[in-house]
Length: 470
Image 1: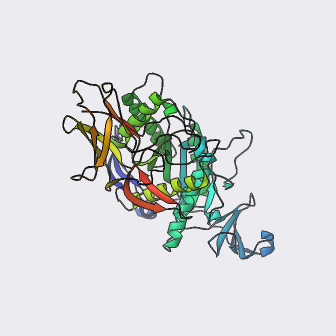
Image 2 (image 1 turned 90 degrees about the vertical axis):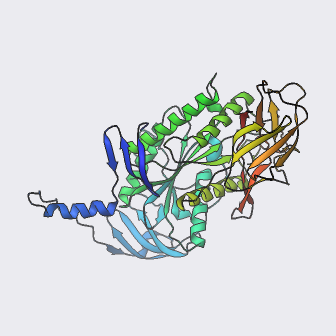
Image 3 (image 1 turned 90 degrees about the horizontal axis):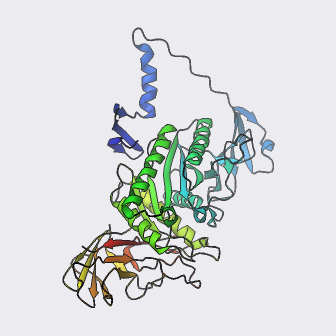
């Protein structure tokens, strides 16, 4: 997969690609069906085997559903189909129940869409309330009992921010009177191998086949943590390691017959009790390089978890989890609309005079300093110097009036060009138990804003990072 080059792409994946064997053309289901219909008509072609007959729908008494407000029940193959009024915002609609269990799911158009995450426990353990559309979200996580065959799907009891993301997408589609798809969520633990991802894909494809639908990866949410930085690894090495991880993910998807998936990448800032500052700097700078140089991968940077308030155990609080999910929902919808979307990324720091630095950001909206400063960054908004001569410090920060995507930083003394200085932004400081934030305090964001379904604010904060001063 590392030598694969995408030549032409559409919203649902690559159409034309090239690898070491030649060109690869991906055809739509409609074209494949048309070829299957026409090929037998060619002279000398072997007749196609007859298509299996579809099972007839058998009407049943609604009492088979139990104490459910349902009607118009039929059985077709292994599925019960019925109309019912069930909890949630759907109202009366069609549902399905498999013969192997009592769990129900909504009868939906289009493919089964998967939301997968490769992250630490904080993402999965984040509190998730009952979604507005509970029968549109189900679980296909790797099955842990090797002695039993996994069920076709799991009734969603808890899936953390993945479930919140699916719920946010459904809520926005429902408000716009758009089709409501079926989402399958699976949390994949961080590991040196991707066997759990392969197991989740097997369950996804089995569910899609049982429903006579195509599987589709709506998003893979990847959290990058300083804990992944190897001893002695620098930012270049960490960037290469991240690219290798994305190559492995793409290869695993290809092995399951699925195209490359959109990747939503977030910097995991760890628990409120703090982390190793050296590894944090390497992770932040390496992720910054990945966002700017993602190779052949479809990477969207959502930012970091620095602004997500945590409980005493380090798990995101409910409003924080909903804010992260809403942010990711906006990113996915912007990508589907072919619109640019990224958290602000520090690209370059250069001298703009003996006592002024100019920090240039990649941002799709003008930058602002948040007046409320919810992370407690202070008057310098989280900017600091490292490696500068003793006594040299930043005394002021401002948005460049000539370029709303650049920050001007004033120094108290000349900065020699020979000094190996760096500009740090929102690097972790001492733990603050009262705030219950990860401690990567920054006040810089762009002027985009939204809110969760509960009215909590959602902002697009700049990515913490560290850059050499040029």
